[in-house]
Image (tube, rainbow, N blue to C red; front, side, top):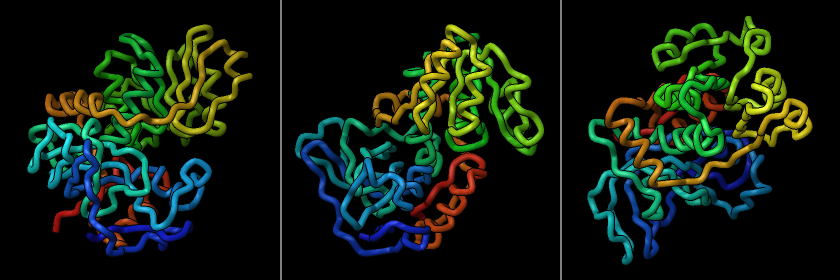
Amino acid sequence: MKAVVIEQYGDENQLQMKEVPDPKPGPKQVVIKLKATSINPIDWKLREGHLKGMMDWEFPIIIGWDAAGVITEVGDEVTEWKIGDEVFARPDTTRFGTYAEYTAIDDHLLAPMPPGISFEEAASVPLAGLTAWQALFDHGQLKEGEKVLIHAGAGGVGTLAIQLAKHAGAHVITTASSKNAEFLKELGTDEVIDYKTTSFVDVLSDVDLVFDTMGGQIQADSFKVLKEGSGRLISILEQPDEKLAEQHRVVAKSIWLQPDGKQLQQFGKLMEERKVNAIVGTTLPFSEEGLREAHRLSATHHAKGKIVISFED
C-alpha cells in the first residue's frame, strides 16, 4: 500500500510517499480502507522530534491518528463489526498511523459512521472531539450554568469544545481574533474576546473552568480569572504550575487523551442529531505535497476548524 512516512525527524519535507506492507489485523482488530484522516498538532510535533522522549519509535513512522473509512478485514475474535461497515475512530498511538491507504485498529475503538455525515467530517472529529469531551467533562466536571473559558475557540479542538459546552448548558467564553467572532457565536459562544485588542484577564472573573489549549503565559494568566476555591484549569499542553494552583485555591492539571470507542459513539449520536457539527476548514489530497501543506498550515496555529486529508480521487 501507499503511505506517507518519515524516516528521520525534521521539517515537513521529511514526509515522503512510500510503498509499505499492508497491515494485518490482530485477533481483535479490523483493517480499514481510509477514506479520510485529519491533522493534529501532535502530528508535526512528532515529525519535528519533540515527542521522541515518550514515543521513541523505529523508523519509518506513519503519522496520523484520526480515521474514517470502510472495514476490509476483521480479526478472528471480532464479533461486532463486519467487512463493509463504515466506521470512524481514534486509533491507539503507534508508529502505524493513518497517513496510509489502510490501517489496523482495535475493534473497541471503533464507532459507526453517523448517518448523513461525510467521511471528511467524521475524520475531523475523533482526536479533537475526544480531547474536548474528556477535558470538559471527564476532567473539568463542567456542569449546566457554569462559566467556561475555551482558549483559541476557532481551532480544531476549540470549535468542538464550544459546541459540547453549549449543549451541556454552560455559559461559553472564548478567545479568538475578531474575524472569527460571528462564526464562533453561530457555534454557540456567548462571549468572544478578541485577543489582539483585549486581555481576557482584564474582562473576566469567577470562571468555573478554563480549557487551556495554548500553554505558556496564557496558561499562567488563566489562574487569575478562575473562581477561587472551586475553579478548574484543564490543559492539553504542559503541566500547570502547582504553586499558582495553591495560591488561587483551584484544581489544575494537564491531561493526555485516552482513545475511547464508546465515547466516540456518543459523539457520533450528537453529530447525527446535529447537536454538534464537524467543522472542516481545509481539505487537501492524500499526497506528499498535500500532507506537507497540511503540516505547514497546522503549525501556524491559525487554521480555522480542522484540516482534513481526503483519499478520494
